[in-house]
Length: 437
Image (cartoon, rainbow, N blue to C red; front, side, top):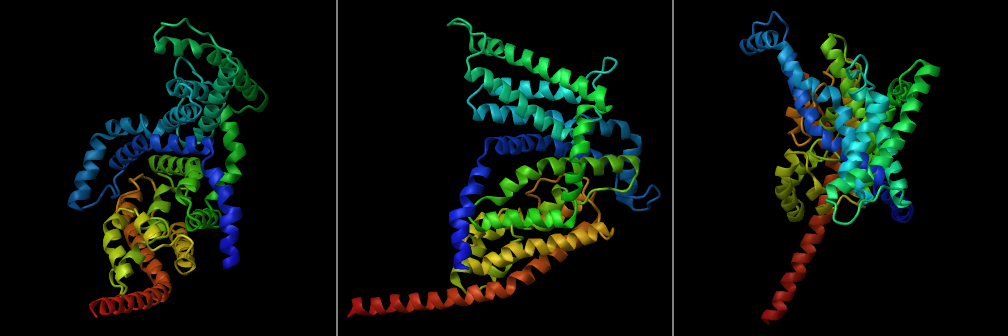
């Protein structure tokens, strides 16, 4: 274990820290975070349009919901079409803004360049209108690639001072617009011919071709081995003191978007939902109470004989309900602590396996909605699965299992701390006796 900890500290952590701070990964993460409010609202409207009740339900609430959705179906779907169904637009602009800002370029120009680059190859006008077929999750990879290209082109030209520089005294906004003229021209001159050539020689549009290329990877991520690898890596990083959820989540963003979009399309078409690994799956079956599925550990802390652990439990209980667990991770500590580190990595891998089996066999519903990750886990699990009660039950099962996994390690750690606390108390008492004498 000492050798492993030394390897983590000296070899593993420096490499991962560089990856986590890599500007393109950070920009991609920022782009998805920026688009998240639109995606959440869009998914809510989709659920309103497709109630989780049969058409002939006799339930009072269900009957009212079904009648409401039937009468206003087209109206309810409009917000979804303007948010979730065109998520790649928001993602491309967010990535362009963040990446340009990291280079100290004009972030607004970066956002607009990225958006324009994406539209050039991802949604070329047809008969006077923009096709939306690849503006949803299927266009995410295209949005990421186009955004990176647009901002890197902008940076390449700015570094070499290839620009139209306006005289001093010209308002900054006007000067920035002229700075972008050459980058925009070159971007159009490069991307548009590429798009035409791809369509001519392959018969695919660029986003369709990119999806074909990434299809095996998307499929692999939606398997149990792919999920377990992501879970293991994220929690190993946390154990090493690095925000694993942030790094791995940034990489998984495109896959989440593709899978949730595919499930929503299937729901709208009345077909079986194809994807298991979505945002709700990670948030409410794997990281219950936060990374490491530590909600059960917090409950154990509240019953602890150790004054230290009991105090941490009292402080961490309320945040844990909303899936925030930094107090537990750093106060316990779990970081670089072999006793708690083992269940911290093991528990979410077990709950991921249980949840995958339940969703794969149809025992629980798959994700179609995007509840905020701070939603209490049982509610979020049910919400994400279009309010199916099976999601709530599965989440509770995962909480019980994760608590059971933590229990023996918690007892070992508790025994160790109680012994230390008694020794400290005895030492303080002896010092006070000496002072009194």
